[in-house]
Image (tube, rainbow, N blue to C red):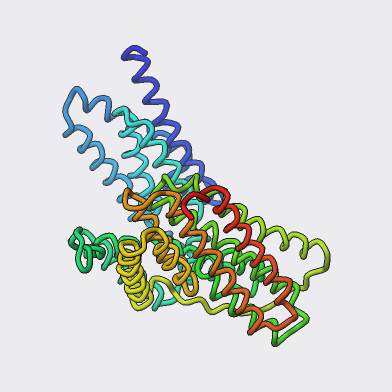
Length: 424
């Protein structure tokens, strides 16, 4: 394209950005009479054009021109806001004011040639504006202690993480404070997604949703809770089995996500065995659902907030212990030591061993050994949860939930054995 075509293209994008944002703003105020709106779809379209044109002119007249136009626009909208405040029923929100100024900025970005950044930002901005009721509802769900826990973890992560020493300490330099805390934050963030998802809908809205997203936070906690509940109310056993299996199946997706973030090269080697284990766990839920009418259930699942400092610190100590012992066993017994620590870790938690093996697969151990260790930990964890179901839930759900978990564990181990039999 020549210079004229470039200018027209950039102005067109600036106009489109303004019209997109103006459509959302105009729809929000569609019931107001003409003249009562501070700005509508046409105004936002013109603001986008103003930003794009000002940016193009600023290339010739200097950046001060763009700044002056922005200041002038700010004065105009501030005046309109003050006039609006004098009405009988004023709109005291400043969202439209900020939206107009941001529309100008995005239009200017488009005029400068940053079309992709400007367009993507406009789409995100429009989504943010349109999701006002949802965002306010989510904010209302958060309790004060949970918000404080988020702020504390952000403070420790954003402020403390960059200054932590990024070097090894302890036996065989196995403990790296920076890497340990970075992995703690990663797991806490993934867990909080599931924790908050359960809080948004509420565990009383359905065991299926609780099982699916609760498993992202802690499949063990979901298994314990639903197993106890089945002993108290045998008539709920059918739906509780489905919730347990959904939570346990989600654990495999969580393992795959965590491992592939630490080492993307583990994604494909882990995909087949973890997918097979998930299928063994998920398929029975479809069968159970289709074979009988599942009643609506009311239950409250009390998950621990993974962003609480005590929870995060406890996991950090567990991870450090696994890293130190695992490094020692690796040095003493080779990959057999890795399998021993994997099995032992699976008795309580799969996240710590998954993180350590993913980190060690960066040149310290073979990918096949890391994959086998992850699957061993997941298989042992499945068997442990099967025994939990038997002890806490009784015979009513032990066979229906425990058998798929056992088959999943065996299926994963056999798959790894076939793929990597040489390492054994």
